[in-house]
Amino acid sequence: MKRYIVLYLAPLSVAERFARATPEEAAKGMELWVDWSNRIGAGLVDGGKPLGNARRITPTGISETDSGVIGMSILQATSMDEALTMVGDHHHLHWAEQCEIVVLEEQPIPELQTARIDSPR
Image 1 (cartoon, rainbow, N blue to C red):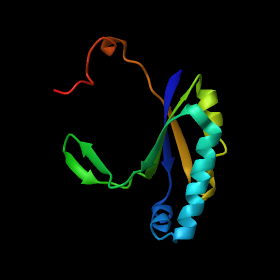
Image 2 (spheres, helix red, strand yellow):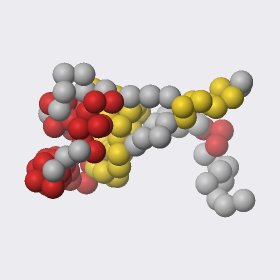
Image 3 (tube, rainbow, N blue to C red):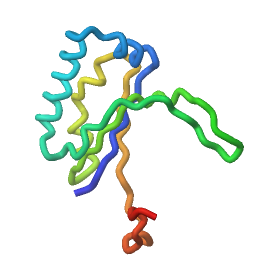
């Protein structure tokens, strides 16, 4: 199985609309997430969380940025096609015309397969 990072992109207006959601609207949104995650089953490794407060780091410094990425999830699937099928009917795509999903496949780094980069220093 391969892992896929799913990025949910949306204009700032969508994120602001979520922040102002009534409890009933929030409950409906959660119901859509639960329904989707139930359909995906074990393929959903991490349901993710909303993202915000983005910073861009360059060799010349750090600045605030509107990345357009408002959330993420992690999937596992046998292929990119399977991962794309998992998100093809995702409710995020219906929140606003500008909403998009980007799916990225984690790539192995053979030179690091034996290195322990995930251990505390």
